[in-house]
Length: 43
Image 1 (cartoon, rainbow, N blue to C red):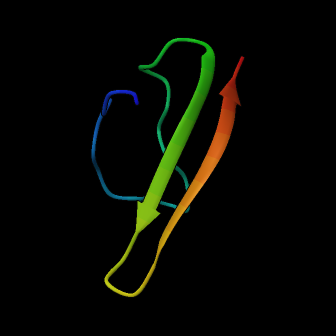
Image 2 (tube, helix red, strand yellow):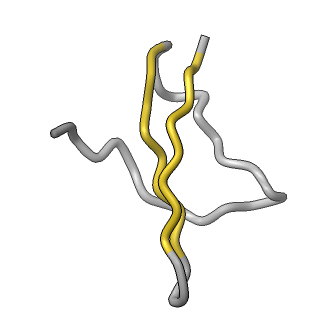
C-alpha cells in the first residue's frame, strides 16, 4: 500500500511530523493491548 516513513515514541502527547512533506498520511499508534490507525492531512 504505502511505505513506512518512521518509527518512534510519543513524547508530550504529540508526534513530530516536521520532517515529512505536506500530504495525506495514515498514522498507526500501538501499545501491547491495542493498535489504532488514523488518517491525517499535513498542510
